[in-house]
Image (cartoon, rainbow, N blue to C red; front, top):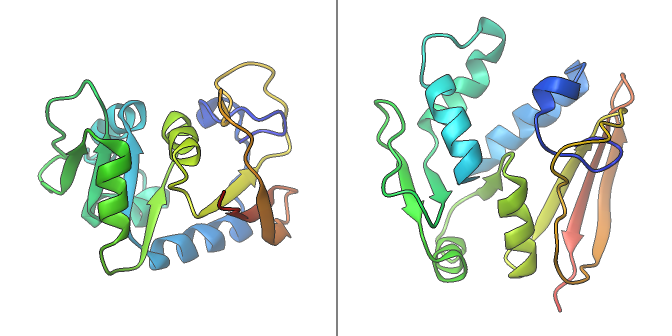
Length: 176
């Protein structure tokens, strides 16, 4: 996200992806065995990540996102194919389905992108931890990470600055 809270269209404002950010991304991938996506992120990502157009620089993430089981939260989609991988399932009832998913054994469930979904998970008290990658830029337009909702409080559990000035901050949500 940007310093002014914009989470939409990082391809427009993100300048750098340095070694520190890469290490954080690698750590996230190693700890994750399930990915949640919102409808918009799913519709943008599926055709790109399952294509042959992925650059060599992005091969590690492509391998991760293509092989990791995914749950797509949407009220409007009817199905969620993921190329030839056949590992994306549709979630229609956010609270019930995610509560059941969280009760399963396994590693971390990660949300990548999907600002509307992140905000919905926060509002339903379904998000335990939030890691923000705050880029040193102000976009002044675009969808913010935090939309409408009720007051939420967080405890900072980790913060690092990357070599290019991007802040990696991890928060745990305080339960009501």
